[in-house]
Image (cartoon, rainbow, N blue to C red):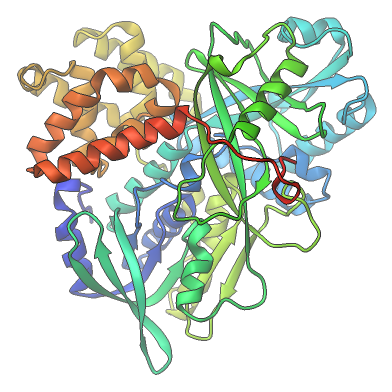
Length: 560
């Protein structure tokens, strides 16, 4: 069974869910919720999912964009966590090589730094063992000269050598989306901008949810045998509605990343380094002609309804970290092109700093039957989903085991990781035959994976419509595909979560935002008021990405 995933049919999907009793309703459209929906649907459970914002609009589009094993968790003796997520990297890569790329990571050893030669060598070796790293991707130790050859920008005066090991870079929002699309392709129903207002109870047990479509204002009642709360930073908000927020609770921490043009920060090699100020570990990663650096780790105590923002303290902390490790770069505030800020929904641990709190996930069971899950890592989403669906399936008498380790994600039908380069070559040539430059065709192929065939179909059939709407054919085809097959419901969905351009190509957004808005206004029959709301939301996103807020750094919220 397959269902569509068009934003033009959102009301139809909500209506459909309201006219039946689902086996499972998932609240939350981040990576955890998407993973649960896919696993449940693969096992034959009738699955629905609602998300009050866009898919991946919260934490799942605001990570360091690595499917990584968490080397630093070895320092906290999180052995089981490192082993589990380390092995999961390979599964994610195999099932979605178009959104996951092996990335050699350089760990420089600096005099007076966190990592000495012996500790680094042993740590990386243990990491390779726990994570089940392939032979050709195991760590190598480097002397000073070899370290500088890998990355000449690293400071030379205190450098003693380095270690190099493999992590996996990802597009977190698109990974979430491809998981969601695969769940929908297999029969799940998922809708963005659908908010769970409150729960419905029978005999003190939760049996349904009252839902409001945030775009139309229409309300729906959705019933399900099992309801799972996977709302990320909002998990406790829903537990409070259920009157079941007892015992452990969430402690939100904020992480900020900065993006710099590659000409200003020409990093050759991804680097994982400790800061001078406090010894925290920070990533600097090259991506598509840019370099991004992060992350901070501060306790977040503001209202979570308000978009978390980069502060001047966050910005200066990262700039200082870059200038310490890469002194020749001489980064200034004027070099920051964009930024993003996200919240980590961690489980509170008394007396621990933000960086020390465990990244393990936790499942909460309510007397009403509501199941909640929080914490965890992007990399571990599939195992988190497995644990939840094991519980739900058992309660519903479903004996199907988890098989999502064998499920190719949407766009991942490329012949596996070993055939991916060949696939990219073939589809790039196909795109060039349609009139794209090599770089344009390659970019589309890597963005959409095997779904680029659908995008090329639009290119072939609608070139004239692209001209009529004053859009280049690649922008137009991506937008139409996004609306019809990725539930793009507003310009910010397209420019941020579907293309990543708000973060990594902000000039491109500025260039095409008006014709994209004009096209969507026409396609969705928006009123002037609705059009203005969507325009203002995009402008707000662009403003937040580029402009820090002033903040006094007080003791209990300092960057740590």
